Image (cartoon, rainbow, N blue to C red; front, side, top):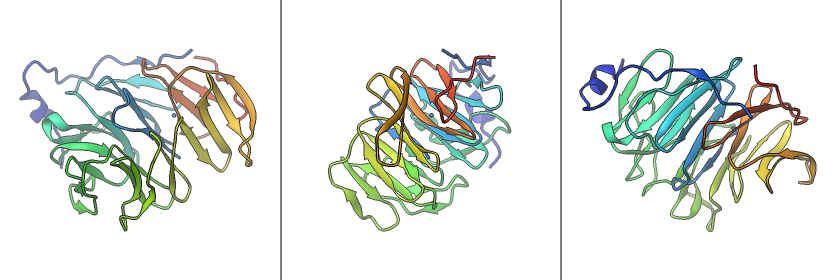
Length: 253
């Protein structure tokens, strides 16, 4: 369904023009905190999308200039293919953050993965609006692993959506997608073929296959993911930083 600008223009006190864009402030497989976190983010080879305080933004390579459209309060963001989406429960829709404007009416959305939109009752639809397998109850967070399987944090447990199996009965606050599967963590991290990168102990850390820290650089709270060749972090204030897998930071252009 092509777009929502006419719908958004019906909302009072809301601009239908995009917010001014500029460089993302310099100095996020997917890691997603539970819904109570003030910051949520999604990463892909297409870029990083995040929402903080209800304001969604997206930054794409190579410039990583932030685009922050004016939308009603947003609760989650996700990548579906090349498109960055925002979950906007106030208008009962998911909306693209940049590029060709698109909107899909979905109802009271609470969480997004790379394949599904989850409503507050746990039912789900695709980004085309088609029914999809969901869960019972509102997920706090959702991710899609490297095999296309969805996992959610639901009522404090980690659950696989395809069969409803509970994988962790007492899950941590951060849901981490793996090349195959998912796990919960106490701190944000990303796992891929290059290793594990996490934000912990006031640092961005690179871990080896045994879980030992092999490199670290100072870094405050935020979320971390991979965007192409880069290890990317984003903070609640919109600070985006890029690092190599050796944790050498790319200078701000």
